[in-house]
Length: 326
Image 1 (spheres, helix red, strand yellow):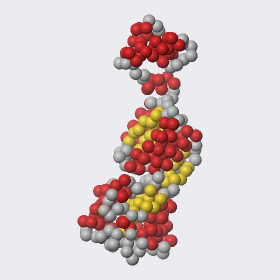
Image 2 (spheres, helix red, strand yellow; image 1 turned 90 degrees about the vertical axis):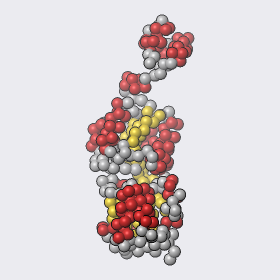
Image 3 (cartoon, rainbow, N blue to C red; image 1 turned 45 degrees about the vertical axis):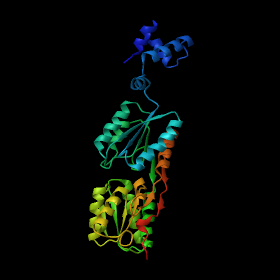
Image 4 (cartoon, rainbow, N blue to C red; image 1 turned 60 degrees about the horizontal axis):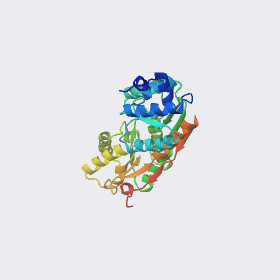
């Protein structure tokens, strides 16, 4: 790799002069700056961003840490955040944890070493608390989104989880379903706790019993959703509110395998309007979490230095999977 010393030797000047010229220091003469830039281009010099950040103590890079980049929800959050950050002169560095707290720790340490200007973070599902975040980031600005720990400092951008789950479950009740179970996700996550609370509140508001036996926890992927679907069928359920779209997809696999018609025999609604939900047969009713808006809001919170909690409303999209003929 070409270094600053190589450029200095080629021009017969000192490395410090080259460094100042590349940094746009006004102490360097215009003709010297132009000569340095031309020689740097000729020799294929590339600026060492990490070294520069170490010297300055900070960068114009914001780290975004997410559980799974292939989930449309998280990719849209990134899109929203990147749009706002790019307009403000920042670049983004994306890390995914694949739901592993060990990977989350590694990602945070990497971002800290890069002297990032801030971190936008949605926690891995097996992160039980935010102690590791506090220890690693110290004074690095932090914005949490979607999955958050309330005791960590900084802004928190969350979905209206309780209200959304209430709306989805109430929709199933009004459609005529009587025994409604839920695929509840992990109770280590505040987001899933709130969705379960919204589901329960809807049942109680409609005078229906809350039965813990038809609450299927720890299911957020297709395989565990399938298992929950089979259990719901055996338990006599005629509908499911799923806290995630992928687990709902698995549940519909189970329903079809057992010969149940959707929505005539069994209704399904899920949180997260992933792209595949409208392509399913029948199409899946979902709660749109507005992830692009969540990403924009998280980025603005970083830029403004906000420490507030902001709630993004959810929107119920009714499709064929919950349109029972009464």
